[in-house]
Image (cartoon, rainbow, N blue to C red):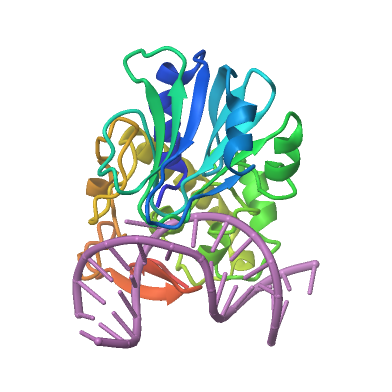
Length: 280
DNA sequence: ATTAATGTTCAGAA
DNA sequence: TTTCTGAACATTAA
């Protein structure tokens, strides 16, 4: 689940407690679950990081990135259920990695916890990260895109606009939940071909991306029914209370107040929308 | 007891 | 080239 707002919340949560600190050791938590995918593997990751200072914590799309004093960069990709934590994890069972700091401090360690285990952790050597997470692989950050960039990107594909919003090369950071929320605010049908948006609709889409993502960041992300997502201090997000359509089938549409929210499947993912006010 | 579904990404096929 | 499908994994609900 962690999409742009949740990952941004993780970054803001750990930044004041991690920047400037030195990593003393890295430990892969051994459990009977399948070991986490990390690169480089095992001892080498520890050797490369040990004694290194965290210069800066930042977000690249849906990844938490620690830039080290050495110029290397650690990219943590939570995918479906990963959490970056300073405090108590939901359980010890699914702890995957621990970075222990040289000084004890209020939080002696940074943790990566992941229930499903699809998340990845990767250390890029100096200069490598730009090649791997640069413009060839990822589009511009969804929050930084201008109206003109949206217009150009959307007109370049015939896919359904909901599916296009999930394409990380088109715009980086939007995921399944926020794609439905953004489109509902624009009153555009999720199955509309992306290249068939009128100029006024592109304008509304640009505005809705800004509105939904910045609101969701302000509310510290969405913690869904299974309660998996937490911020760095294990607190739940609050944006789920503001959802207009996501997981709200059968509810009255908050825009037109007459339609009923329905669920369809696009690209093997759930889409929620109001068939009355979101026009094809 | 199977089967389907869950927030993401990517390789490989169509 | 662009777009679609299934797999990676663990857990829960039907």
